[in-house]
Amino acid sequence: MRSPLHFALICTLLLIAAGCRQPDGPMPTPSRDAQEDLADISKDLTYIATGSDPAGPTDLAYDLRKYVPEDENDAAPVVDELSRRAATAVRSKKLPEQTAQRLAHTFWLTISARDLSDRQVETLQNDTQSMLMSIGVVDQQAEQVAAQVGEVQRAITRRQRRWYEWF
Image 1 (cartoon, helix red, strand yellow):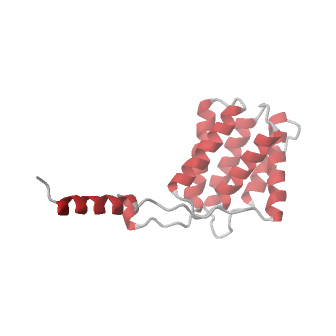
Image 2 (cartoon, rainbow, N blue to C red):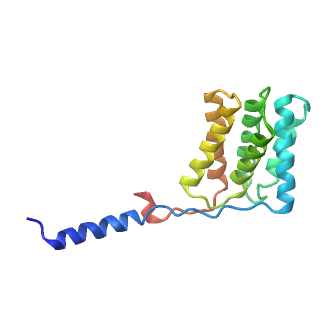
């Protein structure tokens, strides 16, 4: 028969292990200028989808790259790849304005947030993939854009893993 001490020790260890999950990082909120940029990003995505502006992909890359700090040189090519993949995915798709705004916000969060947890990054990836699939983007292409969201976060994050998160 097990003693109450063993039971208490096991409960304590389980509670400690449960408390070791990675805490969520702060989600940035867009400033007034950032909200204007979000509108630009949304328009870029819409122009790419309709094909009405041949400079749409270039404009998208420029608008997204604004949020890459100059001291993070390795992040710019990853953000450019996100722009390229997103432009390829939405080209010739029917992109509702609300979905374009949500995608713009998700891409902005991906580049602006510096301390997101793995769970938050996974949520961004899942949201991106589901939004793209809702407008008719094939699963593989949507997965590639979502995967690039994760790559951007890995290149931009300042968050250091704590010792207990490695287990």
